[in-house]
Length: 114
Length: 139
Image (spheres, each protein chain N blue to C red):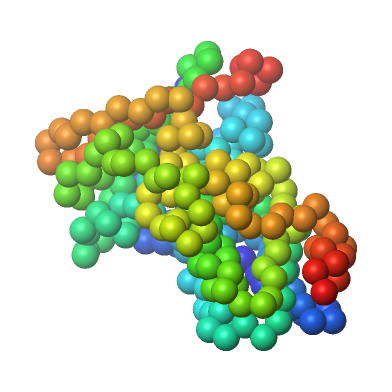
């Protein structure tokens, strides 16, 4: 799995590619951890190139959502492939995590919040 | 048609699993969706065995796939302490974020993506048999 981190206005964007399973999850968790302890920005996870996610990946997403909930910042996911979206829905994470169709949609959603 | 292989209790074996299923997809003419779901089922079970199987030393997980006309049967066997994933409580996925825990999600996915499962303990080994239906258009 690969993660690219970029900045757009006041949002940090993680672009994930490859497979997020119990083998690759610790590496991703480490990367995202710095942003969770004291969020100073909105966070967007762009799943456009993420082929696969297992419960190990969902766990990190769930903890990210929990860390952002009490803050003034937004946590948004976007561009999920069908299978990844299905795993989110079956796990019920779609009920409290914002899932945008595209990265542009998520940036617009963040702007609308302001 | 049948395929048997072994994985060790090591996270890097998930890469091996993905490669094996990729070849199987072609050989058995499976849809990428079915392959992905088989991968997720086996991934969650193998991960569970690695994390909770109580094997400090290297141990082996036996995996067998049998293709019938309308379904694939998966048999996963390991040497860990008795663990029956068919009777673990399901997580409440309707809970709000604040109350949601992480436990049980993997087994929840296994149940949702498979069409039946049966557990037995034989000769000090866990034997889990699962059924995965093949969609009509891909039989």
